[in-house]
Amino acid sequence: MVKGIVRKLKLFVLICAMVVCIPFCVKATGNCVTEVTIGGIDAPEPGDYPDYAVTVPQGANYGVSEISWYRLMGSGDFTPMEDDETFLEGGTYKVTVTVTVYDNYEFATDDSQQPAITGKINEVDSTVSKVFGVQAWYQVELSYTFSPCPRTIVKDIEINMQGPLVN
Image 1: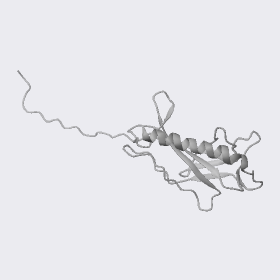
Image 2 (image 1 turned 120 degrees about the horizontal axis):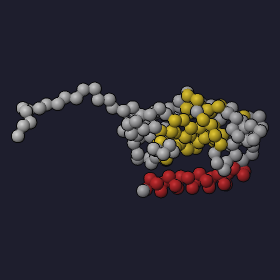
Image 3 (image 1 turned 90 degrees about the vertical axis):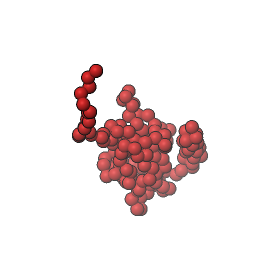
């Protein structure tokens, strides 16, 4: 329950920061970021906790604002994971990384103000999307769905019996 409150508090602080900061951000001209690379995210393994330690290339003109993990449910929808949840055998998981440009830079956008950049997570192409309620030139979200976690494969079963089972 405490972790849920902490997550909601983090979201509240992020929203407050967006409301206060974004109107004062000056859109840069000519300093476009066209590619975002995020590394160092450990792939889900059964029993492990989600990885929140990421790397960005040295000299990048952007930083990571938030990292979220989601578990694929039977309904086909992804649901947010709590920080203390572990990955399950056979489970499918998605990570999203919210990225914000530094002052005097902007993400490239198309004519409809959608992100026009490429993104990679762990050197693999990822989906880049606009963050709801935020200008695409200021903040984008990268997401990647990992392959399902491996399952334990039982190769041998040994059954020991003691004599016949007769009444």
